[in-house]
Length: 342
Ligand code: CUA
Image (tube, rainbow, N blue to C red):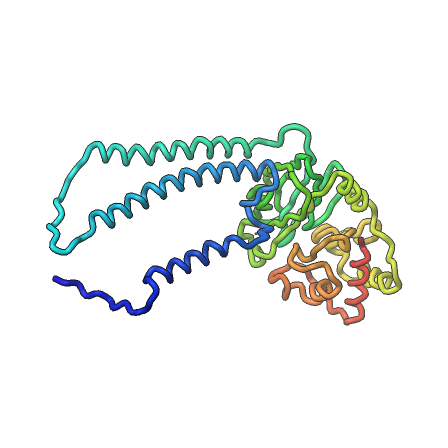
C-alpha cells in the first residue's frame, strides 16, 4: 500500500527548522559570565569535581556516539523499501547478548572507580594548616564566625587566596546547605551536628553562593557572597571587622544610633561597642561595609536598606525580623546610622 506523503512546498529542507532551534539552544550556553556555575572551578575542591565530571562526560560521549551511530546505521540500512521483502525474524545471539551486558558493566566500573575515589577524597577532614570558619545557617541568612580571629559577620564571607579554608557547618534551626558552586559543595548545615567542607581558592574574586536545601518560604532568597582576596587585603578586612563599631559620623547618623538603641532593634542585633547585644539576627557591627543586605538579595544602598526596614517580609517572605511602627524620618536616620557602620 502506498503511504500518504505530506506535501512539502517551501524551499528549505524540512530539517532546517529543528536544526536552527538546536543551534540556538547550543549557542545559548555560550554567553556568560556565569558567576554561579559549577563548571567554572576556582578551588582545589571544585577542580576535583570538575575532573570527575570531565571523566564521566568522556565516557558518556563514547556511549552516545556508539549508540546513536548504531541507531542511524539501522535506520538507513534496514529501513523499509518499496517492494522489499518482510525482514527475517531472528532470535538469540549469545555473543551479542554477552557483549551488550558486559560493555555497560565495564563502563559503570570505569565511572565508579574515580567517583568513589573522589567522594572519599572530598569527604576527608581538612588536612594540614587551615583557617577555620564556622558557617551557621539561619532562616534565612548565613552567619560566619572566625573563632581564631575573633570576627563575626553575616552573609559575606572573606577568605585569603591560597589558604585552605576549613568550613564547619551547623544550623540554628532547620537543615540548610552550604554551596558556592565555583568553590565546591554542596554540604548540609544540620542543627546539632557539625559537617565540614574545605577548599583553597586559587584566584581572587567575588563568588556567589546559595542555600541548596529547601528550608522554608525564603529558601531561594538565602544567598551569600564570598570575597577571596590577597592575604594582605584579607588581613586588613579582619582588622576592620575586629574593631568595635565606629562612632556615628554625622548628626543624622547619631540620631539614627539613638533611634536604633531605643527601638526594638537591639533585642536581636549586635553592634559591638554599644548597648546593642542581641544574638538572634545578623551582627551589624560593620554592616555598612557589606556589599549586599538581606542575605545577598539587595545591593547595600540607602534606598534598599530603607525598603528592607520598612517591610522586610515584602522583600523576603517569612523573614523573622519584626519592625515597630516607624515614621519616615526615623527610618532615614536609622538607615544613615547603619550605612555609617563601615
Ligand atoms: Cu536555607 Cu534553603
